[in-house]
Length: 212
Image (cartoon, rainbow, N blue to C red; front, side, top):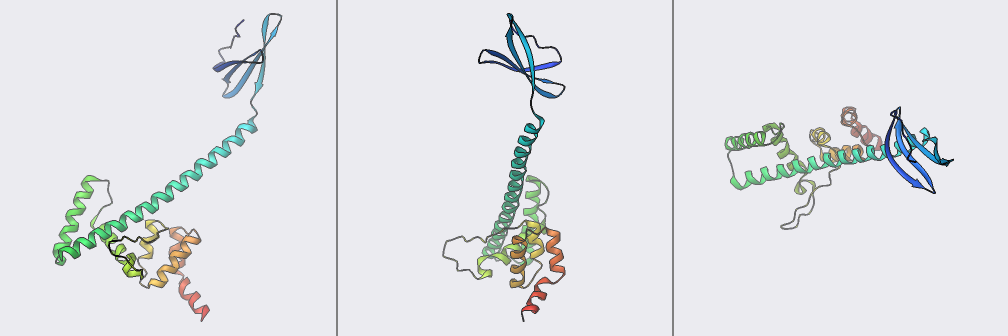
């Protein structure tokens, strides 16, 4: 005889194993496994509850993997934003150098570029943002940090922080001091607020004095 499942149970799967008939379902929000055994030509129903601890353990493991993936995706997106704005800065600088624009004409170029970007993409591509991209490239381009650049080669710096971090670092005029805070922020996994706090406390100067 085919087993009968009551209305209180939502049937999700049925199968036969070792001569026994099984029905998986959900009852009152809990996963239930019904096992039907032949008794006098009829099927007797035995209910097996899935242990809550087993489900909780598996959920925690899966959830942990999902959260780790989210962190990695967010970190990759942050670094991608930095490299994108570095390359935008490079294009702007190269365009200005090629055209030898007057200062006023250069401002108009950035203004028109900003208008086109804002109309095509979501907000954020203001003239100020484009100026920051240009300044960012000028600070971190290989010629500025002393790297040997081969002809026709494109050497990219090794960026490890978010754009918000680099907005703080760009305010630091001393290249050695700026590099110090970049390394410390990366190794210490500093938030932007922590970077601002450490810079505001003159950590670099205090350590330099301690080494003298």
